[in-house]
Image 1: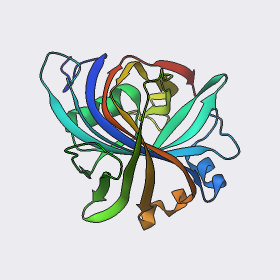
Image 2: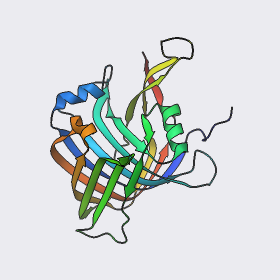
Image 3: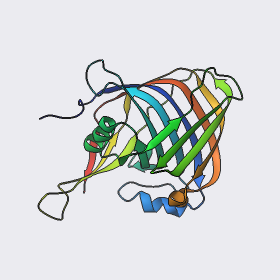
Length: 232
């Protein structure tokens, strides 16, 4: 079998910022997250931009990519995490790997994230996602203070892995899955003030309030195999 990517684990490193918020209409989350994944009454959401490199699952070659994600808090039994409902990247190998291995809803998009020559309070980092010249997401964080090192729980990413069948209407694969990094190593993490705007196509994900924001100046991830929670 020939793949455009190596199998897990994948090694990644780079920087990331996140704006955490609550939906203007929490009921809209139910359009995106369906059973058996469970939603809290007022789920926390995140807008996240990555500027990162990966090793394509094998060897020492480095492949840069950027990614823009909107995810919604959810759970399965005692497990708590979130599920990405908007997910765009600019590297074909990463998109194929995410879709085919994990079932992530990855699509190609034009993503920018401004560089930072130094870190201090007041520095602004911006990210944007455009599709065919139309703005979908524009976000920014303004650094406020560097946070002391702390142990952070490993995140869990839920999803629905669905692969259509070639000869019948029923999917060949239809699963609820979970994955996440087996290792996260962070450099300086900054508390920040965050803001974002969504295009008309994403108006159902508009914020009621921004809860917090952060900027990770450097992070390393090891993303390993996930597991199937349920066959639908």
